[in-house]
Structure formats: structure tokens, C-alpha cells
Length: 255
Image (cartoon, rainbow, N blue to C red; front, side):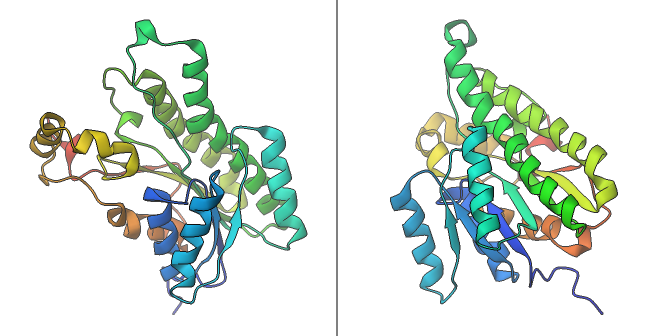
């Protein structure tokens, strides 16, 4: 019987994977058998991430490009083509945050967050889907959403708009690409302990709010995403499409 969660023979590209959630998801996919292509803008951090795999005798490919630049994305995939690397699994994880009241927010700051968190997922997803459709082999696209794919918080309007867009971009990908055996789904992490949330977790008031508001009474850890990302990347989720799975300790389930 086929192992429904074995990723042997598949190659996964994880954007924004030189640290945090992206690196944790990369390690989970590698443990399930996938070959890994790490991505990041900071070359030093990218090398450090690759070294973590090398310490376990696992070789990975690395790729550095600007996910918000269409020309850069095209060049990156042309490079993969030249190296004979086909991406079967894409994790659109690259993202950023900008906290500021909307009445003070500049259009440039708004656009930067939208481009990084939403437009990039379209650009990279488009390149992966084009190649998968041409090869007729099917594949997996997993977009990383957020609690703000469903609800809003003050001072993070562009992030909220982008992550809400991720939810419906995922549906659009499923609507257009499901007939090609491409499953597009999303993960909505709750409050996770990462570099992006370090300042929040170290604020006693906010830390207390998160723990009181979350039924699990704790912050999530990057490794809490492991089983969900493996499930969505594996053959076992072949009839799951256009969905978002929240990994949030129950936060969205309660008032």
C-alpha cells in the first residue's frame, strides 16, 4: 500500500526558509523524504540554514531572489530549469509585518506589505503551476496565511488585507488548477514564537493576552506546523483543495 505521507522523490521550494516557520517547515518536509530548496534574501542566513541540514548529512539546494520582483522570480525559475530541478511542492511562506495605525500609514508601506505577503505568492505560484501543468504531473501549493486571514487586529491593516487575500488567492488557485491535479491549500498559524513576534512575546501584557486568549494557554512553536504541512504536501491530501487549516491552539474557536 502506498504511504500516503511519504514525500520521497518530491522536491519542495519554501520561500522565506532561512529561519523561523519556513526553516521549521523545510525540516519537516525533509524528514518526510522531500528534497529541499531553501530560499532567502540574506545570503549569510541562507548558508547557516543550509548548514543545519548538512549537519544531519542532508544536502539542500539554495536559491536567493526577490519574491516581489517579477523579473527576479522569472530568473530564479529559469535557473532551476537549467539545473534540472522541478518543484513539486511550493510553500509560499515569505512575509513581513508593519505595525502602524492606518491614519498614519503611507501608501509605500502599505504596498510593500501587500507585495511581500500576497503578490509574491501569486508570482511564485504562477511559475510553479505553469511548469507543473506543462509536465502534467500534478503538485502541491501551500500558502501561509494567518489568523488575520479570518479576523483583524488594529495597527496591522496591510498585513490583514494581504493574509485575507491569501485565503481567497488559495481558492482561486484551486478553482483554476485542480483539474491539473494541483492541490492549493493554506495554513493559518496562530501566535507563533518567531523572530517576527519576539518583541510581542517579550511584552508581559501581550504575552499574557495571547496565553489567556488561546485555549491551549501557550504560544505556538514552529514545529507545531510540521504535521499539517506534511499532510498538505503529501498524496494523502489529494482531494483537499482550496482550504485553509488554522494551527492556532484553538484561538479562532472561542470568543
